[in-house]
View (cartoon, rainbow, N blue to C red):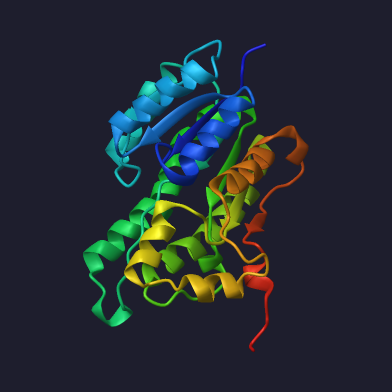
Length: 254
């Protein structure tokens, strides 16, 4: 039996890399796509050594915000596979600026990576996903629930991810394509650690506001993504699953 195949954007680092490792360990064939092609290929080679598949895991370079780049990626992917079982849109970046000082060029770039990039990937992968009754998992955030001071572009993009997820689910369910999202809280990744280092985030305030009292580990987010891609989630569609340690349900004000 052929292994299921998943394409992961932003797959060379952070949550994306952990998703690649988790799914490879569960028998999936991994296609790693990242702005940095070298690390994507390196990770694919590492996965092929640790988790051999009938066909090798592969790495690709792509700028998800650029339509021509995405078309090139899909041409390369279509040369390898006829169907796609999963697409995980992990590509993302962070912009920390007060709204009144916002660099609009950087604002556009962030929205293009997170939101337009996820749409471009979904649209381009549609024929392969349809052929494989595949599943899409988008990455939302706690910033889809409440405002994030100093990160207005990020919160706006992640809020938009909810509308994209729900609307694609309504449109594409008839084609056998499930579409869901995860909304992580604060995760022990470089993106969060950089915020702690530069003072954008207060570790004491963050952990005090999180009922479980700690950061999430990337593996904890990856396991939920793996669940959503699996047959165990075969009737979960158009949902956003919060993986935030209770952060967004805590109404404590003392």
